[in-house]
Length: 243
Length: 243
View 1 (cartoon, chains in turn orange, brown):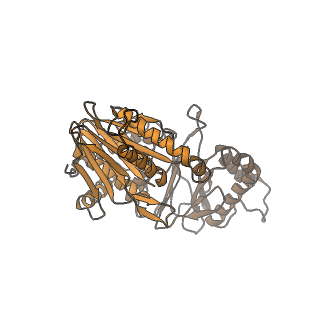
View 2 (cartoon, rainbow over the protein chains, first blue to last red; view 1 turned 90 degrees about the vertical axis):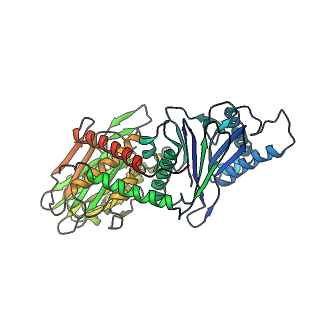
View 3 (cartoon, chains in turn blue, green; view 1 turned 120 degrees about the horizontal axis):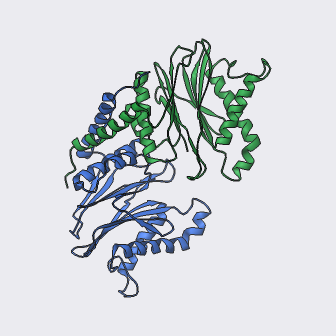
């Protein structure tokens, strides 16, 4: 399982993904699910992946092969597409390519499961955020719903639903995302540390902040402890039900 | 969808279930999912149901028919079984009866989905709490995990995980359960008001507190508002992530 989330704010986009993969609870490994492509001054693209690891790794491989191939104006790549919308289409098309190859065999067993969050900024466009489905189609985050989640999204959603605002500072948003992870990891073992966190600042056209937050990260421990205390304290202070 | 939960405490058991059922989002109705059988001074049994409404209603009908049938020492009923464990077996057996009749047709379409929480007290036994599966087998809540949930359990679990303690007062537990419903209903439309809430007091062998909490319940509105404010305030007061 995976939990990955991205929050699109006025000041930028904050991305995070856990790193646990499992084939049954007795076969757990660590894989990066946060990928990015950066061309400073021109574009910064970030991709979060969830679902079948063979599928999502293949999609990333296809995208990278396109970048390494002989330049051809007829074959766009993540470094040549003119907009984030075109980048989302490129990834959707890579998903469909992989489905053509692996889909039938997977549908007959585990199912073809994969989902993606793509965010970033290209040139003069404002930062944009998309969720791409296993079918290769996608939706874009808007001001009404400025965050997107993939994977095990339920445990961490209530806190996002109540607190998220487009006007938040990036540090506040990163804090909120880590709280959302804390709730998820407490309830679902298949989502696990470390967490990859990437903070993209609007207009920077550069990726300057990528942090891996591990079990012994001091800030995360303090946050987790403070959050438990605050929740318990808040519940305690509420008016009791009259029995 | 359904959300139902029960918390087994030293002082008693608190049960709650929503009342929304739906066949698609364009066909929503209200059905009671909290049922109880009470014989003051002898036993109090409470059943929460989730899953296919045709299945769960049939199970309740079978249990009630047993009560109305000519008494027969060879055919135990909820009013004659000697322990909560026997009551859970009786319900499991009713589920299997319904599966024999309706299982094949349901497996071919929507699937045979049903789950139950049974709690209460019989005679000198301490109060006990069980979760019964669609297969008719069941587990019992212990001090390690004093609460059980069925249906849409994920959104409301983080708060229960952090705060539940067997030593809680019943009014505190009822408050906690309502907060857990508040989180669930915000994130999943298919769980909806009103909520049926039943508070059983250890040793009472009587059901004295059954409340239907509706949209305009003043306590629930105050609680929901205070909880939103407390969560937002708590997040705000936490140390920000350094970007």
